[in-house]
Length: 465
Image 1 (tube, rainbow, N blue to C red):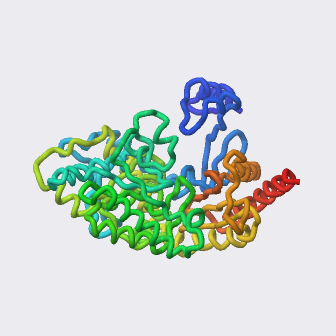
Image 2 (image 1 turned 135 degrees about the vertical axis):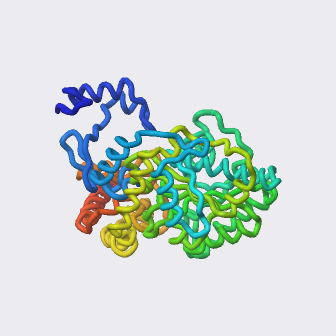
Image 3 (image 1 turned 45 degrees about the vertical axis):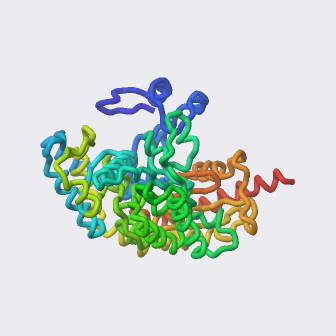
């Protein structure tokens, strides 16, 4: 296969794969895997499909849960081209701005909860969370309480891949692999993972208990030492852990009781993923700081935002000191323009409402009809267009297969061979499809996954015999 383009010239697929293997360091990929086989080359995408090497795949992951508006939207390409020709770059340091950063900030504030009106624009979810951590520290120092430094995170958390944000993660390898993390200020509370940890409790009973572990953690550390609690409304990366309805209101009550700031990491859930613009509305709570990224531009360009409540902003901006924080491309005019256009399209096409009233309920009902009684499936959980299929060895006891068997990977590979991209996470199959997905495409997802589970379960039964 030859790739003909201005930048590629007449380079062949084999040449490009060799360039990649020799020079491109991949995220979350072992070097051994690339030595054994060349990387799969995606070279085009449209709607809910990605293509490469003459193969077309339905992407039920929307990239990494981020291409909310679907691939190949000409409106976003045209916006980027227009703005890049007019203002390719300028910084936002020292009281300088551009029209697109100003308009995007106002648009985010208009959609955010009414008490959140200040927006710091950066480039990635990790940067948005890092910004939140810095602002929390600045808030407490400015208030004359510098001892409040501890941050409470949770089991199964994912908040980024910088040194600081990785320390918050529930994936131990991410937090320890590089040897930098030795923090006594990161505290951990229970995750609201009812299926694995709820035992005989109802989901609502377990939601209260999981939330109260936050209070236990605060009291053990001393409230005067705790700066903030951070949590994803739905814990996405580690398996689409949808909390019981009782969980988030109780967490907020506890944070208010002890004066602990509440950070909602909505990098995944923001801009409609759970059926509301922000998952705080879905789950009935109110944060002091909110982080946004993936759905902000549908990842057409790298952009993120940290949205700050009036309470926090009033303290931080109450003095005359410079905010000693920023990135070269914070508020980049092209990325801001694309993000703004993306939000306008979500509004104009009613895509967030469609997730809540049509696509999300249809995905949930279809998955449960196709897989709810499958012997390999322990639980199906959804929130809007986030879905997880929890695999189990024993439906009655919820026993998991040993990780080394990689059962979930086998299901994911079987689905891939039928033209479907899903994401294996431990013993959970994860999906976050684009908002433009059709009912017919959801039917295809369910049919393929049912067949994949059938095949893997049959192979397991044959092994036992």
